[in-house]
Image (cartoon, rainbow, N blue to C red; front, side, top):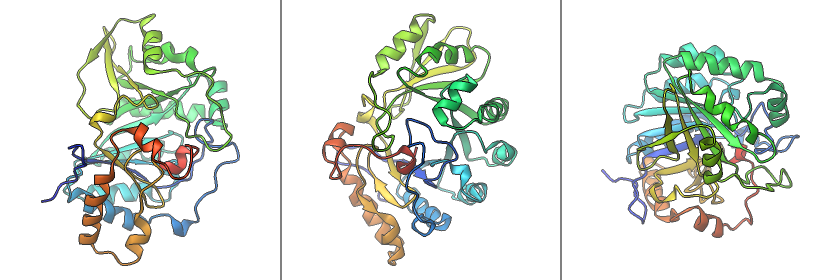
Length: 330
């Protein structure tokens, strides 16, 4: 069986798939206060089309899918899609990234799906007022309740914390303290410029090294071995139940082992977070492409995967990075 492999010898076995561009929050680092120009619903991939794309990818060696948005639980019958996707016998792992405001009623149903392993919960502040300022929505009680429910569930919980200069850097140590008694993996993410045109300016970069030094100011950390394609460098703290990690998303020191591709909610295939899209799968499918044609397409597209995010950004044809993360797919 042909496998997806790029020109740098990297085996592609992981796809990040955005199921919608819609979101119920308006996080400052992700999109403007008024939202983004949403795609008409007929321009979004249907769940049937998503299933087909993922099925073909698994026949080429993809074993893991992460479902993102926007906010995936905004899309009607998302849990039904999870159930559908669980029937793909070639797929090993389904992970979900969510903002936590809508998932609580579905946790019990999701726990029954054997292939759903990890939930990444985006939460950038532990203070209600600040959380409201960041997200422009007053839903902190619901999100924190979700955190506690997920921590007690059978699902592995990761907390995604985007480190924003002048906003939440004073809470880095508070998030680390959460791992003392909670079985969570707190992952600090370097802020990226994907926040829509004319939005929040990044006046100071809280890089991987700066974040780590802040943590070391109070805690003694020990680095643990992570799988080669891990997006984070991970650490344990003595007598802490949980773990911490740092994702160098902006400084891009994780590119050499990249095993990922992306598909947006409108069907745009992306080899890298920083490229501006290399092919429209939606139109290809709707124009009658066979599964064999899709396979051949994927095999050729991954050959165009750049060596790293800096090359991808330099090769953009649509100018500087200004898209919303909600459009790209979290």
